[in-house]
Amino acid sequence: MLDEGIRVANMLLDPDQVSGVSIPGHPAGVLADASAHAALVVVGQRAQDGPVSSAVGSTSLVLADRAPCPVAVARGALAPERSLLPVVVGVTEDKGSRAALDFAAETAELRDVPLTIVSAWSLPPTREWARSSPDFDTVAQVARHLKARAAAVAEASKIYVHRHHPAVATRTEVEPLDAATALEIASHRAGLLVVGATGGRGPGSGGRSGDAGRTWLPGRGQVARAVLGRAACPVVVVPVRTATADEAGASSHEVDTDATDSAPTSV
Image 1 (cartoon, rainbow, N blue to C red):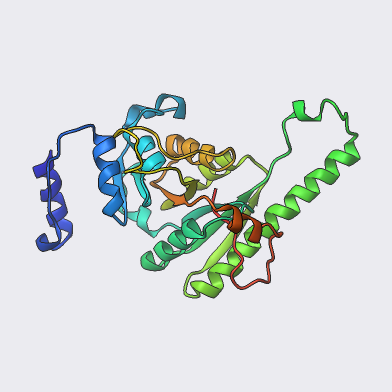
Image 2 (cartoon, helix red, strand yellow; image 1 turned 30 degrees about the vertical axis):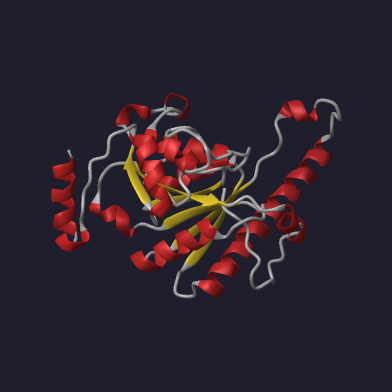
């Protein structure tokens, strides 16, 4: 298998740029350790993985949990024309790192394709309304508020990309869906889907090889896990470093669409 991988890589790259090594150990643990010195880790995903619940123990998910660098998971049908499709990135209003948005914009620029920024919103589950029993007008007001916030997030992200990656053609989509569903739908017309995940302890922090190390927070990590199991195109999970208390306090303001360096993080 290693020899075949090297053979294929040599067809695509200068042979001087290709090397291979066989390391004993569990694939997830070995690759997670190697990721400490990598700019990007690329893995495949079994066709039979299906629902995300059946793929929780897969190498791709363990790597997405632990690797300190972006992890690309090859998904969807192999088609040369896919590289001509837009790069899609999911964003939220959470403050943190711009890593995923930058990664998506840089990739779109390298491929010379557009960047689609997806911001999703949805009403809270009905059980959360039970105590207050709101009337229709209240529900409609909440919906308008959530939609406006999602639109502001998308616009702030677009402004950021235009300022820092001016060569990239950018469009936004504000979807009235949960984030995972919105991104899954978008993946059918994408060449690459980029999402973020909150950083955990990573390699070299005392965990055993193959242990999960990243903390998946509701609304971000769970979205990344879901799209890894459902996306129709390759997915890149970009680690988002957890902010310190001082940084969190400094960035607790609302999204400012006019601020030069204000941009939400990715889901």
